Length: 306
Image (tube, rainbow, N blue to C red):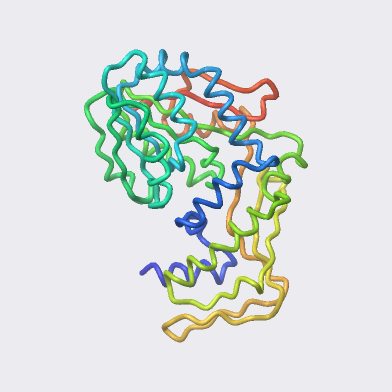
């Protein structure tokens, strides 16, 4: 089955693949979201990294960094600066689906030190993980920003297990996890007053149109979010304002009724029990846990049990 056929099935099931949110424009819009007052995740995670950078580097003894879904690498910069206090040379690899994100990462880090070597790798960390060069040095993998929350349980375990398989015994993984908290605080983070999240959400239609030669009209959709209490997750939708037909190049058509909701992203929020079970089922062992004063967010330092 080719990618167009997979997308056709996905749209019929009222789901748009989340990865298409993060093209070059989407990556820039996500950076704008991270700077909004409502989006607590980035500043909270950054505060944890700042507070515990020395301990994280002492515990991991990392000789190189490998970041999955790096974005602009602003939080990772804190750890790199700490590591360079003790290491004469350091390698950082940014692995991201977006060329724009890779460029932002390089711009953020290139003036740090002549002793920092920066490598940029464009790819999808779900499908391309198996192609990663595992290297020889002690590596710290980074998966920050609570990106794991975009995966359902099966996907999360599969991804982390595949990562644990390529991790050497001396490697570590630092992962950011958003925790369950007041629902209004969570919902506001995905529906900012400035409208960046709405633009970010609707941009997925432009991406899909360009990639698959479709004819979505984004002005026919509204951005909406809901908090699914049963699954402890934000669900982000594009809701159709009218009855419309989406035409595929192979002459197939999909009817979208007024009021139909297309799911574009989930963002799960975890309690300790749930996330520890996911780690255990992924053959990962928790070595250290770091969190902010409000316990809004946690960083876990893990290594592989394989």
